[in-house]
Length: 186
Image (tube, rainbow, N blue to C red; front, side, top):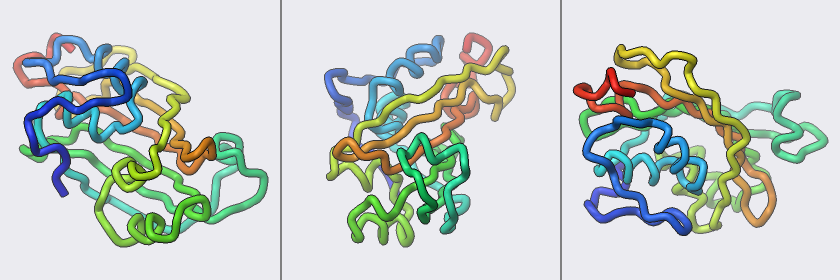
């Protein structure tokens, strides 16, 4: 599935995102992701091209004790665990993510699409106008200059109508987020 295959900038709330020519400062990307309700759309705007989804794993599970508070749940509830990678058009990995999605809090058609399709979570939720709340950002102490080196991790919660529906842990990688010529500047 391709996302944002047009060259037009993507609007995220009150900010119009445009991709820079190179990636001299990943702090800017962190700020854009914090202010956005869609990591997928933000990455597409950042790189100035399409982003595709690779579903690594998807299975039904139960919440971990550490996830109850983030999802505002007080009893066990089924969730879908998703592990995905977002790729650029050259199939370089932009980010890797895992999500715990409370399927019972979503309309049936969206829960079914999560089980059956390779559409990113944020895009499936788009019609419900989700709000992405950044819970934490952890920067790599000294980002490496090798492909696949982590730049930073973000943990976010997705809310629909004020109700938490998913917790997502994302890792952004040097491989896709930095141009090879600029890797040492990141």
